[in-house]
Length: 240
Length: 231
Ligand SMILES: Nc1ncnc2c1ncn2[C@@H]1O[C@H](COP(=O)(O)OP(=O)(O)OP(=O)(O)O)[C@@H](O)[C@H]1O
Ligand SMILES: [Mg+2]
Image (cartoon, rainbow over all chains, first blue to last red; front, side, top):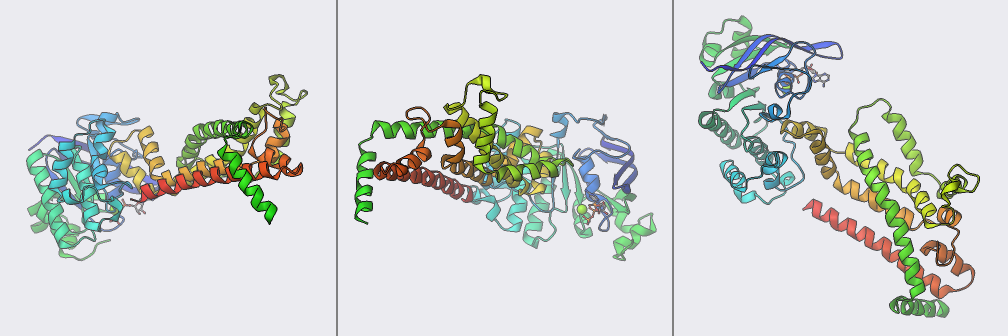
């Protein structure tokens, strides 16, 4: 088993005095693909924002690479983690500039890496097109390429393929799988699609009402879950 | 009609002959407006960006003040600057009254709220999700602000052009604090007023054409930039 890249204990997040996230215990292993599933409002996106250090927890700390993250997060550490959100927020610039953006931020623009990335997501022919005029699937591929080109340690994916056609879903899943296999990038994937979780993830966790109900390796999670709520969720009987 | 045509022709001849008196007025107009605009932009764009990005409670009050500032009657600004700079005023010792410095001061007061307020609005109009995304990609605070400003670039350029348009064509305040002194504080607008009053229509028309041309160039430049941003 790989050493854990994140360790979380008693992590809470409140909005307007309402606890929306309350995770007792979670370890994310280096080089794994962890899928998080659960109904709307379960706190999945909130957890990703904390893992990306975009917001501070109300209680508890995220331990990343054995370092307790609190107060101001060092820039180098922030730059090891990035998120692809459900709705790709692209800059009003060319596809190429968007993909190169993270490198530009680091003062490390490398044309060959940008080109290679554009090839990988099948957008080389559109490199000079304005990013905001692309189709939904193409935009999401730009967002994915922009995240991958900076070679993050951890890639957080928040419903990256929601509302996309099967072709784009397949393409994105393959890139994610490849990134994990070949570069060892740790991936946390939030998805509403349990089939996608099953296809991609090494481990799957169920979130419900801000809590992590169960986390298990994929086969166990789907075939012999230990929590009855997981069983119900996997069967498609919604649990609230 | 005939007089108008003749005036127009002579005015164009005057412009083409690069009349030194005319050039001096144009040059002073551009110098005063340019300096005022430069200062308003250097302070107003960052201030507008900061306001647009902040989540401060007091922002409502600041916004109200800015919007009031955007609607200030220039002649009242002129009066205010006059009182500040007059010999008995708090800044009388500067000796700026009836000098280009006083005109620059008045034009800064007129253009600063415009640049700041319109920049703030442009920044607020950008996608909030993009800020989070940019931060997630590893942007520092300054890089995030820069990203937002470049997303809002059309609005920021429009803010600067609008401010330019309002101060290059401003007459009341510069007349008051500059005094329209020949060879010293006479600018395009005050010269037009004077020459119209004294019946020197040729010069007035020539100055008017130049003023229009300047406003046109500024707006054409803005449209061009917008076109580029739209690519
Ligand atoms: N910035 C915020 N301010 C207030 N409440 C928030 C904020 N962000 C999230 N919430 C609330 O926190 C709860 C969890 O939201 P979150 O977005 O993490 O859920 P989710 O599991 O990602 O849901 P979905 O599957 O619909 O995306 C929700 O009830 C939401 O309304
Ligand atoms: Mg969500």
